[in-house]
Image (cartoon, rainbow, N blue to C red):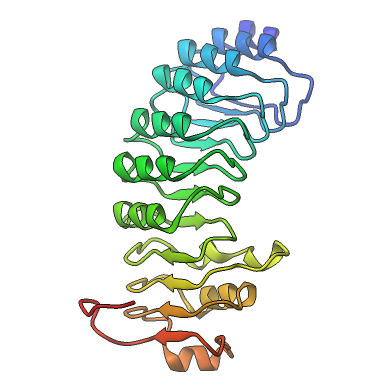
Length: 272
């Protein structure tokens, strides 16, 4: 790593994922020597600590993509330090970084408000509503948010985020214990947002789903939800041109007996 830092000053992308013996020392040398670094993948590098993020902040102002999945030594302080110097981040993956919480995410959302497009927080159990509300307040261009396993997140903060990012949000992966999900008017969300739900083994506890005015969600997406969820009680699909009663019947979709499905009606009418 020291040789890379000394000899490749124009380096823009580096992927050393799962090089488990790497430490701050070697990677800090890269940061020190490669000031135009744009993309850095460190998934599974378990010895990485806050010290590296400090080095990135001080030396790599053009950093746009940082993958820290499974780097469990990373803390809120590290993220705060990172974005003091790296404010062009578009993609931040801190899946399974169990020491990251609301303080760090809130700081990132403010510092990178104009650029952040993708934020991955899978199994960051310290992340709660404060983080989501901060994202809703500042990151109006957010496209992808993964919050599976973030059990402190409630329906109200999700509603706030969906409303704030209605024109940009394309992919929302949620905790399987979430009961209410309202992503009305998030017109960039597609069936892909629901893919993989039936591969995770446990059943969704979703009770209420509102996806009205979604031109890109089809019966395929609704079918993916239904295969993972037997508890659905209310589904609003008004103004979804690809989700009609005939289309659902043709696709062989079977709704739970207690589920109320709203296919038609004015969006200005009060709903549940």
